[in-house]
Image (cartoon, rainbow, N blue to C red):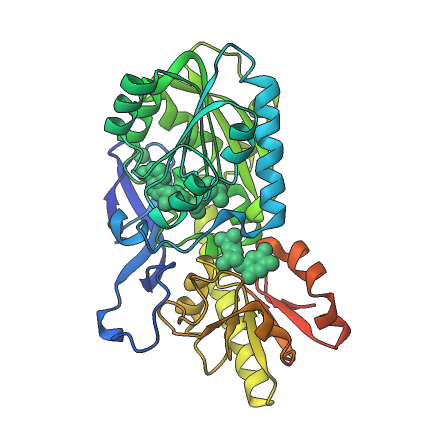
Length: 409
Ligand code: SAM
Ligand code: TMP
Ligand code: ZN
């Protein structure tokens, strides 16, 4: 009998379809000399709710362990993502924010990467961001931010002090939050009757299509589809009215929810929903087939790295992503197979990767001297990184990718 848990959206039964085993906190980079016995581990497994179709983790990690003053992910680290959020902000300015004194709330505003454009345009705004490390950076840019978790009580307090919102926005944040009832009740309370809740997160359709299993880690609790989002929204007086596929972070969908009956669903959303049903995206068999492909990637990646080590080749990794914790811990990839991982984030440098303890070095270490192979953990930024590191290729270096299958380019 497979393991089961209770669905955080509808209370139905979630049945497990893949177990990644013992995993650490994906963003907990350790100081050298840390007592490894004290490192936090949990069982990372993922399941499907047969009632509402939501794919979700089987076990929840306490939120304060993940999102606190040590949270090391700074959204502005990627030029591509800065442009992505700037164009979304500009679009909102011409679509949703045209009335008198519009008000925008962003949950998980991080270092202010999106709100900066709206703040510069003089739009009334508020970021709600629990991780002080990044919230402080947003505040230093002149963005109004509350260092708090968004939930029902926060939303009620914002209504009292600031009034209702025209737009509530969340990027790569909603999928991080297991307590969905509190969030969506908060959204429903905070939105104006004419307002919208726009959020973008990794799309299960892309995860299954590309076997991008490393999207599954402690911080990503939900793996949305239009079907599951529609179900979830309808329980809180909200309705899915638009959905747009995005290429960022390996494939996402930007969903728009509005108070029930306030807007007409777009044809694009209805077409994508029909496509999803035809693909049987929320079927158990589809998800089990995904699991079989993950095991094949593990086998191929370990075989490749072991062979390269035995041949005396130098292999380093590029991008100490949260995602890579799933890969290194599922495959048992430590410093014996990968010499170090380089990353541009100062908060990660000089530390050890979670679980398998690969040293993290600054970006400059990559070329001093170049390795024979670079395992691209930040594959979702491949275009930006490969362009920036063209000299590595010119020097004969090769990239190793493991999504959608293990290959060398
Ligand atoms: N929006 C940024 C982006 O897309 O790059 C940041 C995404 S980051 C992966 C997720 C953010 O959500 C973190 O900064 C984290 O602190 C924040 N977060 C987690 N739980 C939250 C909650 N309940 N309310 C608001 N933000 C939350
Ligand atoms: P992400 O996949 O969650 O966006 O994380 C990307 C990680 O890769 C983050 O730690 C920053 C790092 N990175 C680099 O080291 N160099 C780069 O050029 C880019 C785009 C990211
Ligand atoms: Zn459910």
